[in-house]
Length: 142
Image (cartoon, rainbow, N blue to C red; front, side, top):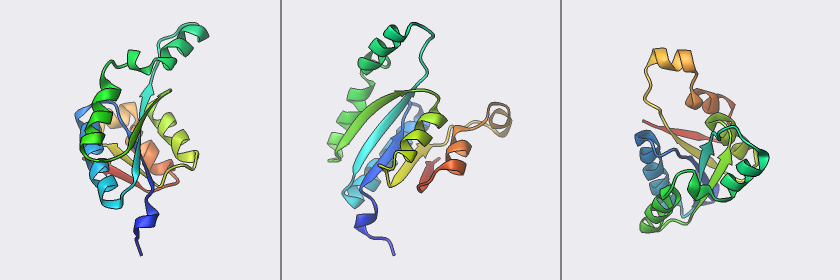
């Protein structure tokens, strides 16, 4: 039986694509319904450079996507949901699965990229990778 205690922290993969925006909206509704918090994570593929430059860029995550964290956190506040923003270097699949393995989350919400079958076959699919290897329930929002 499902109860409110089952969801305390929801992880949302976000990249500002239309699919990610729909996933965020779904996660906000879920969080409202269960009275839980969101952790929104942005996977950043960083340009090659010195470790110092990479560390500096990560320290100021707003430099990676100016205004994006503010937009997401403001939307969560409008919905009355407590949310946090986190930028993690790496590919989306690796970042999301590492966050899941941290044990801090009860549910993961991601958007479907909307790629066609051929593109998914050629490029792989973050969605497929995450769904296959996640240790927590995953909702894929179309």
